Length: 188
Image (cartoon, rainbow, N blue to C red; front, side, top):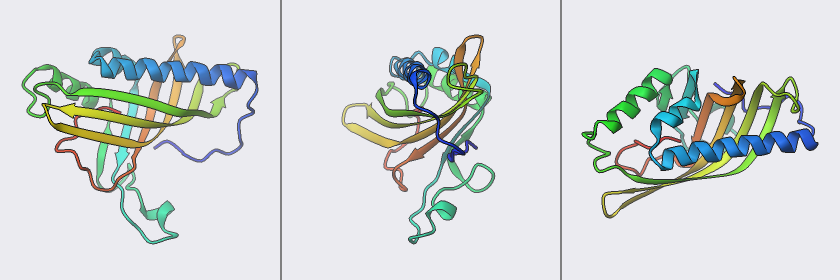
């Protein structure tokens, strides 16, 4: 799973801000592809070795958050613990037009904010692997009256291949422990 801890803070110089802007534009393009139902284009944003993970969350006693609040990718249940093949199959299912929870298709809007570059290897100026964090708000409207709001954080590892970014690790932290939606068909 993505490591949410950072060993040393990245220097916020011109190279950092240029890299962060490039990452932000990547995220905005990715969000537009999802919102406009260009799912095949969205899949191209994902590396072949992606781990796409959303843990389940628990209410725990004070002081136990780090160890017990979220499930892990290695054990226990999760909302998502998927690879590229599984994500492709989910897209294919939606695009059949007979997906019980996506017919008619939902109207979805992704808002991405608070984008930060946490690490860049070998450096911000010539980054090939980047660890990022951001916040999201995803609005989903189903049929006529069903609306769902998802708020949370994402921790991504991006790799640069052939001059463009791809997500190789994504950890999605939903800021609720009870899922209020009837079905979880939205991509984050």
